[in-house]
Amino acid sequence: MTDSLRGRSRFRRVALTPLVDVVFILLIFFMLETRFTTRSALELGLAGDAAQEEQPLRIELHADGATWAAGSRVVPGRLAAALAAADTGAGAIVAADPGVPLQRAVDVIDLLRARGIEVVALRRAENFR
Image 1: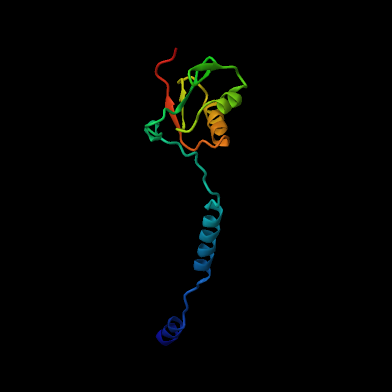
Image 2 (image 1 turned 120 degrees about the vertical axis):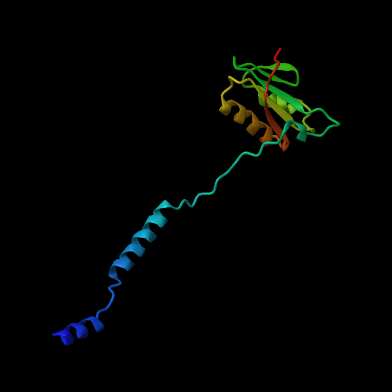
């Protein structure tokens, strides 16, 4: 009887089917968890990045909806026209009141970028008129 048991154990093979199943489950899991999207970011400079010889254009956004550009109040919806008349060779600083929605500041930065202004700094406004 011992000979018959030894003969069986000598030809016993390891089953690879469960291992293959686990590998496929892991493969499917990692395929489903992988994100193939590219992240985009808005590049912002610091306030000191603008050229020192020229003063950058300062745009102030107030929480009450008022907008100031180059020291004068801008009528809502007319910021693009005010930017066309302003000298923006040294870049621009967008100073926003803490109560201003972020989307409003991003819209102003988009207007500046569309006009070709590459140096844009976003900062918190401390003192308003």
